[in-house]
Image 1 (cartoon, rainbow, N blue to C red):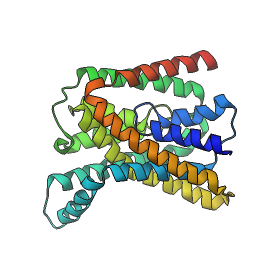
Image 2 (cartoon, rainbow, N blue to C red):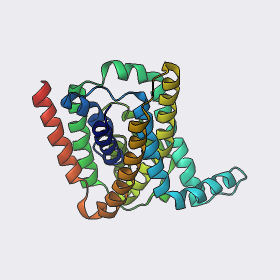
Image 3 (cartoon, helix red, strand yellow):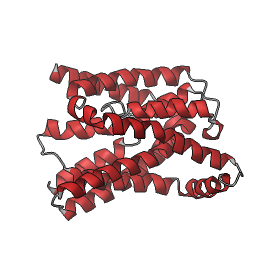
Length: 264
């Protein structure tokens, strides 16, 4: 992988990981459309490290109280922060189970451009509907256990390329009555254990394959994905109440339509 490819792919990962437009779709499609070789497992691990660093840094002031209060809840002291921490952990269980059960099936049969086109359009329309009809009256601290279950199951659907992990969890949160910013914030908090799990799985595969590591592209991948993801989170949350979800719905519909024209 050359330097330009590494920068472009890391930038795409950083900008799409937390937007409701599917980072996996863009990362699968870009090398195909540009005629690039597969970026390899080592680079995938690198950009996961970058985006994880970005979201942890953005939520650094919230995460420390959440972790401290979570340990306090084990002794019977419950707070809004401890309940939010439990919600994030429990919301991760469905995607962990689904990943173990269906990862090979998804890798073999669901990574085609046609599948991506259908999921990009279908879940884009669902995002539009949730944004248009949701009551948007609660914040992330008001999430109940049934809400967590719904959002956890929704997150498991994001294993299908084109669905978008952030897109489907924001959609589910809006359907549960969260406001736009709260939906995005909870979606981003949910991403932390998922990125850790995905990055850890890829690291184990990498160690097993003994892939030769080109350190310059890896370093660029970490740096560019981290900076772009952090800026993306800040701008997205700052503008979300004003712009809503329609720009991202429009992006998904356009991307899906282009894919259908190209691959049907």
